[in-house]
Length: 127
Image (tube, rainbow, N blue to C red; front, top):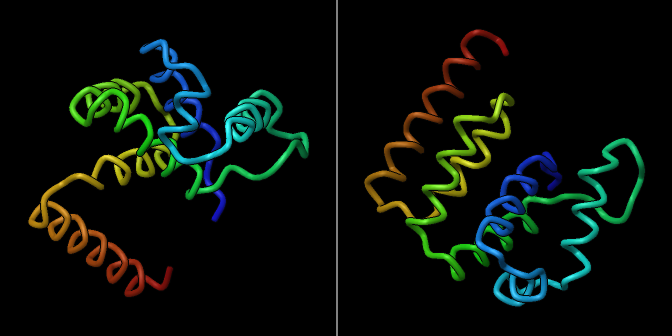
């Protein structure tokens, strides 16, 4: 499933802040290094048909790689900074969903319940 390339840019900025090389990030993420270069080209040229698509699977793998390399607390700290700067609500929601990956069951249950309530409210409004 495709996702907004801006999510990759925020993760790439965190990688850069920690001086992590692409090869190390790719290995920790269990993806090929050229995938990272392709995603950078897509971000720089969003209207061009360059390489493959930016997908949730790739973003998730890259997030997991950063989590392994810098730790969950450090990554969450950076994501919170990114969230405060990001204007696109869809991008913020995607980033928040990644951060939930390591939440405890009660936290995930609460988020799931809230999302289900929003879906139901939208259905009742006919959206």
